[in-house]
Image (cartoon, rainbow, N blue to C red; front, top):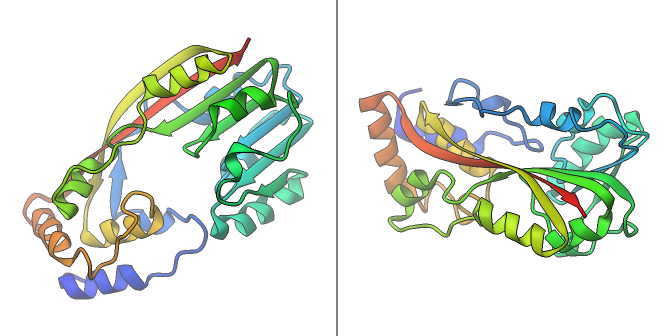
Length: 249
């Protein structure tokens, strides 16, 4: 389809099950990160017997962890993802604990229970990380950095959007809660949308990027992006990512 109205209507109606990125294949592309998150996790698993995955999403990444610690627990707060994660992880003996809004600051686990906590782009509370980790335990997180895809938001809204906390702020919060930050890395990664279908689906898939998004509300800006793609071949935004590792003193 090349007609703008047909394309955006199709993207707006396309069913989303869980947090499924596969329909975006061919509609957008992103350069690889300069690190491999799964490899960073697995390289640190020696001696770890208890592992917590915060915001496991669909559970695919946690299911790939090898070797597996003897006790692994996942949490998830995005309702459509919970049954998807449970279907994937429960057969592996990994519990998936649903977390309601506001529950991330008071997770249902004992003090010092975990040797390691991992987090791929989910919210976390620095005091809770400190409480849950055993002494010498480690925390590794990859987060969306300050101003992620801001070019997309600014074109659609006509204003500077609020920024996510930056890496230094996150590091300071962990240090203030008794952890020692041992590694920090940042990356600015081109994110290319090859058609307007991908833009609409992406904004539906990650509602936190533009919480009030609907096609009707942002039709004018979507038309601008559509025209830009037809003229230039892609609409390019910059994805911000950082990787942070800390150890409990």
